[in-house]
Image (cartoon, rainbow, N blue to C red; front, side, top):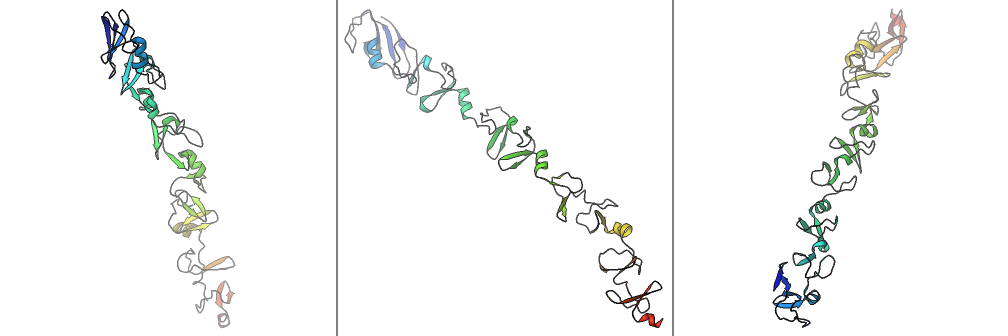
Length: 298
């Protein structure tokens, strides 16, 4: 009696050619000289084996005949030519595989691809080894992470998020940053405001000595700005009384102007009696200032 054994799991059986006198367990046909199958101590013909005993292929749902190669995993059975990756159809005989939902087998490559996170740019999987960018639980391929404005790749460079958009440094500066009143370039950090206009700190300087004026006292003359010292030396009028600069700072911020001369308000007084004349009647005699009474006493 020649035979060969199938050991594909719990349903193991032996196939051979009967040389002794046996009948099929199911149809009772004689088996002598015919191919038969022995399973669980019972002898049966090939036709009855496929009808009553054969395992059903998980993939094609057909019986796995006595002459077919059978694969099994966790009480599931396949024809060897049905044991293929559900996604790429590659044969998985002698290959690593994963049993997934609906009893479908997947190769390791397709499993890794399906389980990989999806790029927010191209929506393709990001597999192990791919360079990527992550931000707030979102992920991109490095080359898919681009500026919403210029479409250039940001990659691992600096960027600015705005809602659902992302901007490179240059586009963010031109699109959102305030522009300096003087140099017209974007203000990316710091800066100051004067009369509701933005300035770089390094652009808001004294027109004479070029020192920065941020946080310091200064005087604006038309479109120029002067620190206290430069205003005194270069711009301020000299008081006709004390001969010192009239700066508008500190004591004597009020100024008295008469003809082509100016005075601190506290310096504008009668030449004879020294009475303060700011906002009072006065008389000019021979280039000097007097109160209304003193010229009569000269």
